[in-house]
Image (cartoon, rainbow, N blue to C red; front, side, top):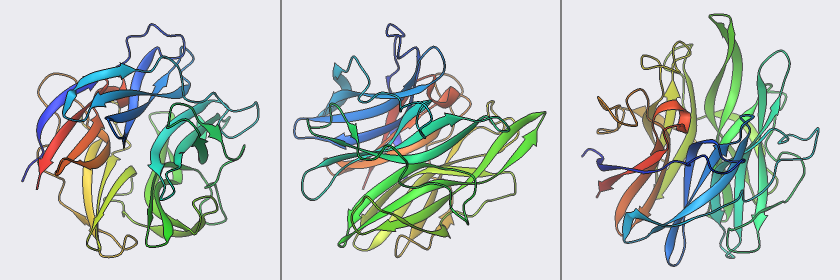
Length: 309
């Protein structure tokens, strides 16, 4: 069955200094009365900051509130997130605490940037967040020497699980250094300290593919993942731009890549002509809802699609 009812939802109007463009990597949190969708926007210097909108749980096309500031500021000079704070996922744990797992950005010299995974916590129902640590919680290791990013985290079975993008190198394309990455898995007993075993979840389809930004659902011991993948050539345009992939697993660790989900390709016109990217899937009112980006890595905003079981 294909994904249907594609609806454009939101992009910033550029009236705030901290939000000049982009509504990237939409990440939904279901609250009592609304669905809160966090997103990464960019200031005039291209630095990512995270904010949110609230939408009606019974009419996802109706925005009821647009937050007017970032949920947290950039990191201190020299820290892992001094140049960007990009939402990965927002999780309410079994105790009702709300955590923000995010991608921290810092500029580099030989390559454009380095990214890492950070953690923040909210004490006001997800309106603001404070860093749990000044440094990253999932970072480069002896076996992952480049970068980590785009975490999706779930608390299940007495433990914590993270699927995330991990850098596997850089490649020069037309005189520009471009990153390669794959979805990997990490585990934790508390959601704070993570074990990285360099476990690859999504194999590359070819040597120039990059895949990242997983979103995972589990039902009756079976796991499903939606993720983004792209070519390293012309991925800012149509031919190599991001697409949404799909995989299944019996245990959340060992994955089999399947055919791309139906109904999620680019459209002839509108906000998703060249790419569809960065899926985030939730279950709401007995439906699966996918929030995702279109063209320009979120410059054109985000929307949603519906899959009815």
